[in-house]
Amino acid sequence: MDATRTPWRLGHRPALDGLRGLAVALVIADHTAYLPEPDGGIGVVVFFVLSGFLITRVIVEARDAGTWSMPGFVANRFVRLFPALWVMVVVVSIGLAVQGFTRGQIVGRALPALTYVENMQPPGFRVFSHTWSLGVEEQFYLLWPLAVPWLLNRRLQRTILVLAIAASCAAMILTGRDWLPMHAYALLAGCLLALVGPLVHRWWLVPAGTAALVAALYLAPGFDRIYVYGPMIATPAAVLLVAGAADGNRVLELRPLRFLGRISYAVYLWHVPMLVLTHSLYGRASAIPAIVLALVLGTASTLLLEEPLRRAWRQRQRARRPHDAGLAPGPARTT
Image: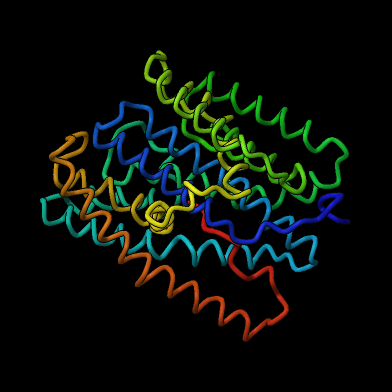
């Protein structure tokens, strides 16, 4: 059966790249102390909502076309995400060894990052601790495609998702952990947006989302549990911004912002290790050289590693299974 009453295709929306650029800028501004905590967590929420939206569209559109492949989807995610992560972890591990860390200490830091379970580690800011968000997303990518067929056969899809979002918020409030169930509310909010049907042009979506995001950034540092309530109150703003960006927006389509979004995954990977290794985390002006280096490394990773690999992967899949769109990468990048 069709996933939606009126099947529609998202395609590539340039403003979504700009939204990624905005999200990673928030994370960097937090980790360099140009913005207060938990504004970086709010940037991650924007990534989560966007990821839930895009992944759901990839799944639904492939099912509508009869080309869905779970093995192909998993392989696509692996090619898209793991090589850049592996290179970053290996290079940074060499840096840790030079600084005198033992093999056991390095393995203890690297293994959770490479196996996408950093979000289940004890709290603390370590050189790879920022990969907790990758762990949340990868775990979601493995489970959500299995739940989608069941959900699409239910009459009350939106009600079920709203209840799941509420349960996730409750779990976060009760535990404050970084496990998938506690952060699923943001991902599921993006999934809900992807299932509401063809997006209708609304000029006010991005302005309203921007105002709500600014309000969340202002209010979040005042909470006692900033990393619980800050990202939570920013989620509706992220939904508005994703909906507006998917419809197109001139500001989010500015070339510099789009390029930052293009390299956002790699920049996110590299910026924390560079800050930690140079002892400039939350260092404001002293952190600028580390961020410049992260931008250079992120650009190199994107242009020389990630995008060539994705192009080669697409060509290989077209040659082997020319009609299997389920194996092709999604319409846009996710973090």
